[in-house]
Structures are given as C-alpha cells and as structure tokens.
Image (cartoon, rainbow, N blue to C red; front, side, top):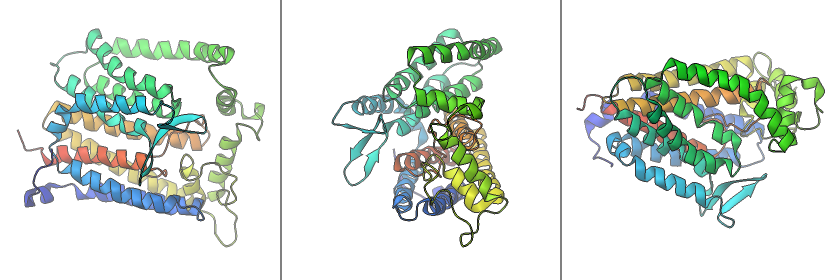
Length: 373
C-alpha cells in the first residue's frame, strides 16, 4: 500500500492540515499537564503523538484506493478485535466497562476507536460504487447492517458514549448518497415520539441505570438531582468553566478545580473544562477556531477527491469529528448528559489520538492523488 516517496509527493503533501492537528494536540498536552501535573498522562500523550505521526505518514503516503479495496478485510479484523475485547482474560474491565486490550510496551488499546475507520471504509466502498439517484430501501438496510455489527458488540462492553459516535458516520454517507426526504422526516418524527417512551421503558426495566437516569435528569432539572451524586460531574464541570472568565485563572492567586481534584476525569472527558479554566473564553474560542479550520480543510479535501469513495470517507471523518466536538463541549457546558465522548486530539488516550491521525492521513492521501485518474 505504501508507495516510494517522491519530491512531488512532498510538494503535494498537505503540511498545513498536519500542523494544525499537531498544534491542537500540543495545546491539549499543556491542558492535560495543567489538569494533573503530578500524573504522567501528558508525557504519554507526547509519546502517543509520536506514534500517531508515524501512522499518519504511512497512511498519508499510501494509495487510498488500495486501502478502500481492502475495506472488507479491515472490517473483518475490526469485528474480531471487538469480539476479543469481550473475552475475559483478554479484554480489560475499567469502571464497569470491558473496552480495552492490554498490549505489551504500548499499554491499553481500545478497539472501538479504531473500528470507526474500517466501518467508514466499508460504507464508502459500497455506497461509492452505486449508481446515481436516490437511495433505495435495500441499500439503506445494507448500510444499517454494516453499522449494526460493530455497534452491537460495542454496546455489549457496554460503551454507549463510543457507540453514539458511530451514528453520524452513517448519517453523513446516507445524506451524500441521496437519501429521500421522507425517510429523514420519518426518522426525525420517530425519534421525537419514541425517545421519551424508550427512556421510560428503560428506567422501568432497569436497562437505564440510576447513574444514567440522574445524569439525564441533571440536564432537564438540575435542582431535582443530588449535587453530590451523579449530577456532580456536570455541576463541577460548569463551575470549572465559569471560573476561567475571559482569560483564565491566575495560577499564583486562584485555585484550580482540576488540580484540587473536584473535577472528575479532567485529562480526558472534561479537558475542555480545564481549557476554559486555564485559558478562559479567549482560549476556548481559539481552540474552536482551530477545529473549524481543520474541518474546513478536510471538507476542501473532499471536494478535490478524484472519486466518490474518497469523498465519502473524508466527509464521514469530518462529520464524525464535528459530532464529537459538539457532544463533548455540550457535555462540559451542561447542555448534554455526561456519556464519555472524548474531545478529538485534546483528550488523553493513545487509541483516540492514533485513530484520529490515521483518519486525517487518509484525507491527505486523497488530496495528494486529486490529479490521478
């Protein structure tokens, strides 16, 4: 898959997109250190960046068309990994979730982060080869089936936060493949009608746990939930964000919610709250602007794609990243329940940073071959 690197490849390589992604990671390393300076999460993130850049270069200088052709094999490997993580003795259970596999020298490996990529490739391979026109019901069912297999395995872990990040991948590809408006309307209406009923049934049956119910109720009616219970995450996050003000707290004169350990998981799920506390409104807007520039460059790459499959992969990657940013920021600001969706390139975690750079590398590969027939 990897071609010999020529001067033309170096010239056509999208260095700016890579530098923006690296800059966001470096900004994240600073915030991870601010959150927990006595821990080694920040140093692990630097090591993760080095590994991610190697994988990024390998994918970026490869021919993306061969990667798409290998989608069924990669998809099958992904499903095998999701099965392995569920086997006791192979999968690791942390905080009630069996989502990780321990790899020697590397540490914890989360298959569900990586399986997004073969899922997108599989969807793009199928829908990229179809003829023009509106999507047929049979084609939609095949797309749903491609998504359903890994999604079902992820829910067995269980990891609802990771599972929810898969839906926008299919939604973007459906939209770009010409889904009929009546299917969109039916889906929206069904969601509005069935969501409250499903929530009530889940609470009654015990499928929705008490902590999940309280986190949802903390958004709907904060005063009805014990602030020291499962609403604690949301309340502490909002306090941390508000404390940052315009330009962030002053280290010498003000105390940090994160360093005092009032804010849970400050290095991962709530890294945006740490950013708000340390850099204030100015820092948060700058970060969101960097994300906007990065995503706009991904979308520009989709417009330059020489084939439909390449375009679909890039747009699914961009859509998935936008969704994760929206979910994480909404969770931190108290607009959405806490469900454990990481902030791309900012939250600590080798699996997340590696899979994101591999995805961006695929975008680079497509842009480098925009003049190839």
